[in-house]
Image (cartoon, rainbow, N blue to C red):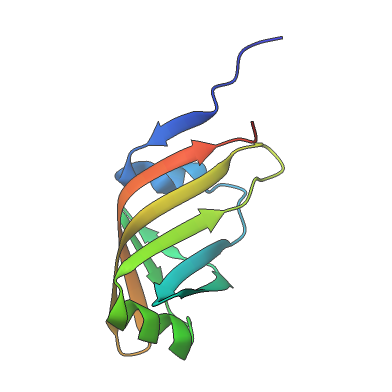
Length: 108
């Protein structure tokens, strides 16, 4: 049986290559002492993730704290979860996240 690393770094510009059978992502924001999670399908353009219908809580949270984590669950072809951290911004109803760091992570 081969060794599978626990974590595999992913270059932010290479995120789209990891999404071939991942249907959605969880967008996680934090405002003060509580977090907010919403499941969405991003538009990917290099290291920028775009979300067109996030809801008012996500947009409000990013206005207070621009740090955003996006998590794609494991897929049928991969036991790894894709986790990306970045800076979010709001433009009307649209949210963009510039990914600064990403990693594939499997259960220990």
